[in-house]
Image 1 (cartoon, rainbow, N blue to C red):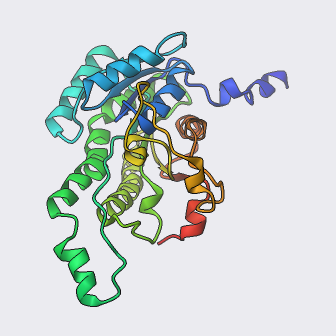
Image 2 (image 1 turned 180 degrees about the vertical axis):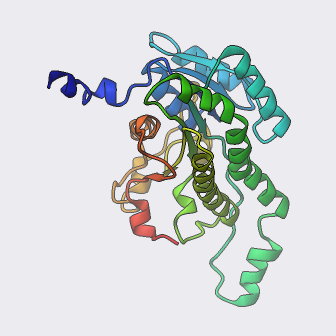
Length: 293
């Protein structure tokens, strides 16, 4: 009986000690939150992004006095060649990869949806709309790279599952509630790309499972969390801030998400071996107010 009780201890339920992880877009925002959640609990976390200075600053600031490690490797995951180089680099250092978190993403320009006359609405959403090139860039970063990064790391992810009984490796795509709600939020390109990312998660989860691989693929769909995308900047610690008052009355939680909220969701999605092909919504209740598609 005592042995059975031990299985329910927090350190066993959410154990990531010794796990090898890779997190994209991890120089700030949600990527940094995920990095700290895993490394602070004993994981070896490789962080990657396009700005070496940010990555090295994160490793310098948050690697002290923790049981895990934070190791920066700059790369551009919007390039297939760069993804291949990243796989080669991780393969030189590790025999396997337990956790892949595809967090990198960008926003898009806003579109004015207020006109109620067809000509005016056409001007706003066609003539003055977000350019097609920007749509392509947003899709490349928010959807396409999830596919190519995940598929590139399948061999290393499968090796991790084969080396430990009872462990299935995990891929977590960071999507957004913007891909779930029926409102455009004034940025059609961004919301459409996140909807694509959510569906892509489900397709990858299905096909990977059908191939007999022990790799789970899920996505976390955050609401508003402090990041360079939402706040516009980050401080010397690569952290961003959002005013609580701006969100009172807009979501049932009456506040933006906290780092701890995201950390809990990441640890849950990483360690729960029965979660596959799912969308974990962490939004303070925003979807309840906005309504889904």
